[in-house]
Image 1 (cartoon, each protein chain N blue to C red):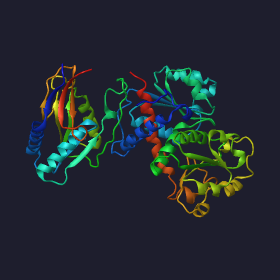
Image 2 (cartoon, one colour):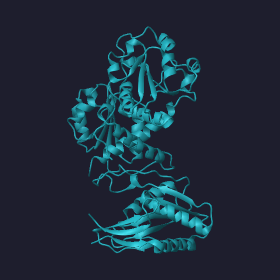
Image 3 (cartoon, each protein chain N blue to C red):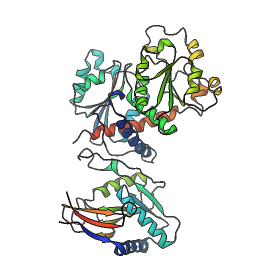
Image 4 (cartoon, helix red, strand yellow):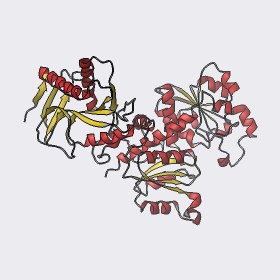
Length: 180
Length: 308
């Protein structure tokens, strides 16, 4: 199998805009809503989503935090490569708030399970919704689904989905790779 | 990134990379400790035994808190209330405890090398919480971590260690740790309390407190360990305090701000006076706070190496 580009260019921007409008449709002025990006890669998508939302709504601020879930993962001591923790930056409590949890690829669902666990430590949110840039819907290990999806990818376990953002790579893209 | 060693027996056996990894992990745990709920589930399937064959307040509470905040199961043991009094050997005591399926052992022991001895005979990961006059690695790590918080990178910084160097495990571990991080280290105290040939470790030796204070960015003041002193090393505590104690008067005679540290317990009025220990220069309580984060990082990183 060769590398395949799933999303890029104007279609990618369109998808991002559509996702933002779907979220705005449900969250209005974002008064009680907070965005929480899951470290590390989810934050890269969350940064973009956050900027795009501010632009569309012409707001100066939406509650935005970055959550590291390393210490909550269920594969600690069970995987070959050690887990490296990232910084959690949450300067607000989620008590009573509507939380939008943001990650780039929803795959087994285990990261989100850990994120829900970690989130509990910042209070009891009113509700939690999941925004996922890519949904690999046939590879789930847990009963977790996204509320807002950028693009759905039906791929075999052997494939690898890579999300690139122009802050780090040359351009915004979603790619499908064969696993090495 | 992972540690290069399965046990933390001393700073001598770990690398500079290990120290940085411990610091970076401790940064993350410090954030955890500032949350409303200060607990993570990482070590929920790990059992830790705290074996204290010697008295301790801070280290023991700090380790226990660190273990509990990582969700580990904890058993505590102190020699004074155990079968050690009936003549059981160290190895027997520990093997009996380990047969109850303990994964990690935190041990303080009056005999130098006791943790090394254990590590050769048992399978659990061992953390040295102080072995006689040898090493106290977690104290050195939390000291250096606290200095790093105040000064940034310790490369080229001047650190002075004052007091009873001869009997202090904190001094030795501090020296190893600070040298590995590239700091300049001097020890200062009465000649009788400074070990011969300590300059071979790459540290300077000074007998003049004022001169040393003028040189250093950080003054790490150690306790006079009367319980380990078998002979008289100085005429009286009053005289020691007069010549080697750190007081406000001597600090205000120096035209720069020095950070003052002490690993505790403090002999107030002997090696340090209350007006210094409780002043804004002192980061003694921050040291204690950082101790929990550092110990969480060490437990976490060592547990990582014990694959399920």
